[in-house]
Image (spheres, rainbow, N blue to C red):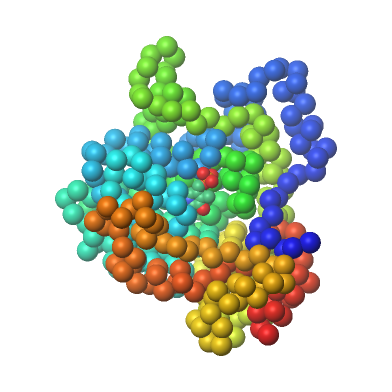
Amino acid sequence: MPIQVTRSSMPSFEEYCEEIRELWDSHWLTNMGVKHNALTSELERYLGVKHVTLYTNGHLALENVLEAMHFPCGSEIITTPFTFASTTHAIARNGLIPVFCDVNERDYTIDTDKIEALITEKTAAILPVHVYGNLCDVEKIAQIANKHGLKVIYDAAHAFGVTKKGVSTACMGDASMFSFHATKVYNTIEGGALCYSDDALVQVLTDLRNFGLCGEEGRYIGGNAKMNEFQAAMGLCNLRHLEGEIEKRRVAVERYRARLSGVKGIKLCDEQPEVKSNYAYFPAVFDGYKYTRDEVFERLKANDIIARKYFYPLTNGFACYDSFETAGTDKTPVATHIAERVLTLPLYADLSVEDVDRICDIILQ
Ligand SMILES: *Cc1c(COP(=O)(O)O)cnc(C)c1O
């Protein structure tokens, strides 16, 4: 059996069946049913955040929150290119301009020393990414945003379950988006959520994800982005096991660290002080000592171990952004350097220490 880069966490078959049993009685499958509503309140409680709005996926959540903030068309949103396509596309699909800030070399989140130079009179918001579950410098970002009157929306797709001094990533910035895709630490098969405290956003987000309808009134030109009952049921089950799954990931990560830290040619992310990690990914940067990243990738693959070049290529190098003046990987040299050298190694709750050892043996060889 090949070792894949990830493997979805799932409850037992029996637990899920029990959770969805009442749907067979009610025939209520979607549109804000009991499972959807239960998951909304459970997440508000677990995350300690005032409002959670659930979505059928994280990407549409991000598109919706940008739309809900009513930025003038052509406004600039400062973000990073070292992310999944979704982050940048959500900006551009709203008629907004992604302005790419470089990342820092410590944890590959936005380099806060480079944000202010990118601010113009058209800048409306900062959209940083807690990439790999690494927390951005949220205090510095808040300071810059306050000084310049900008909104802050976090792409927290990787950061579910991460806290700093006990405060969840859900409570940072004006809004945070989580993805509950099958490949994430916590999944609802596909799914996503927006977390925020502004009461004024509740109605507009609720309407936007349901065709912009408010009762019979067509208030917004909305789409369809509702989470269905089967997704929510999976979420209720997986939430019961989340802490245990994160603990299992921690064991795998500590083994990786024990085997690979301090090895010449391999750079790992430092652990962040005061941050409780969710151990979402294990990125390793191969600086070309003896073998390049691509050679390591191929050697692992020859051994049926699937690592991932995540994130490569950078979104500011995508062909679809060729016509954007702000695009071009040359403007973000640190992100470019990392993207050409990084591999995320296999990591999931059920990855055994023996498998971690086998992967490390091949790399060390
Ligand atoms: C997974 C992911 C998304 C999108 O989430 P979906 O739920 O798959 O739509 C957005 N941003 C980042 C960084 C992601 O990794």
